[in-house]
Structures are given as structure tokens and as C-alpha cells.
Image 1 (tube, rainbow, N blue to C red):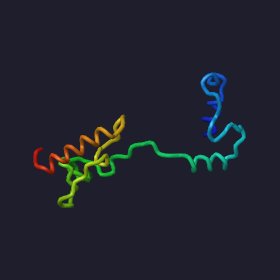
Image 2: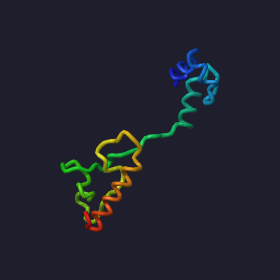
Image 3: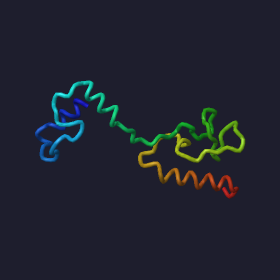
Image 4: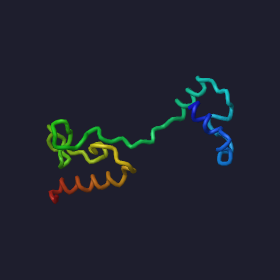
Length: 109
């Protein structure tokens, strides 16, 4: 955070940065003040996925028909089945996964 604040104060950026809004313009914030600010305001912006990975190997939690291995009549149809994080937002792929899961459940796949 200290390095980011130093970079953002460089003369080359002054034309596009009017002022530091948060945690504030004070150049001498203590380590504790910065830590407190981070703990109060930091939020995740990632899209978690892969916690119940789909695959054909023994380590995969879900098979290619989205069935949980070893648990009868249970399927997973969310981002947790994605083996890896994709490069974009996960909303559209999750809609596709849910649609495919519905096909499996209805027997039309």
C-alpha cells in the first residue's frame, strides 16, 4: 500500500489524479493506520471456482455429467466445478453449466 501510494503521488500522474480519497492525503500514515484501513475496506473481487472440480480422474469431485462422486442423486451446477478460473466473468459460464445440468436431470442430454 505504501508503494502504491508513492507511485500515485508521482508528478507524471498529477494530471489524472486530483487527490487521494482513501485512506486520505496524509503522507505520513502509520503502519497501523494503513493496516486498519485495509482491514476495514478491503473486499474480494475474484470469482471463486474449482473447489469441486469436474473431471474424469480420481481427484475430481464431479463427473462430466455433474454428479458428485459417491453421493447418489446429487449434482453440482455452479462455478465450483470449473477446473480452472476463466479469464472473464463467471456469470455466463455458470448459466451455461446450469442449463447443461438441467438437460442432464431431465434426461435430454
